[in-house]
Length: 121
Image (tube, rainbow, N blue to C red; front, side):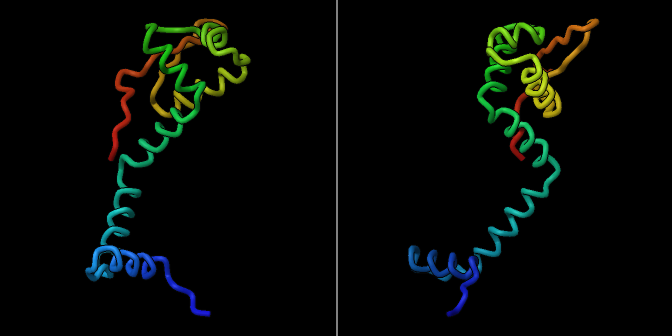
């Protein structure tokens, strides 16, 4: 049995669909994808998108968008999560650069970062 490389199988499929030789464009698109994935802003964008992919973290960001600042216990009350889970989720958002935090004694307060938008590289 002959093993077909994914790139050549894709080229064959593209040729069938378009009626044109596709062997030249598959490596071009693969190179483009590699350049994008290794570009400077890609890891940051990926980290931010992953941070927002969780329902409770997205909810916390949406709450912060409506309030200037919330303490961890307010986020806990709104989301129904435990204190430890809120702390974990907020740490992910802070690490992604979407949220800023400050401490006042034992209290942790959160607000949106100055530029929380996700930049697509």
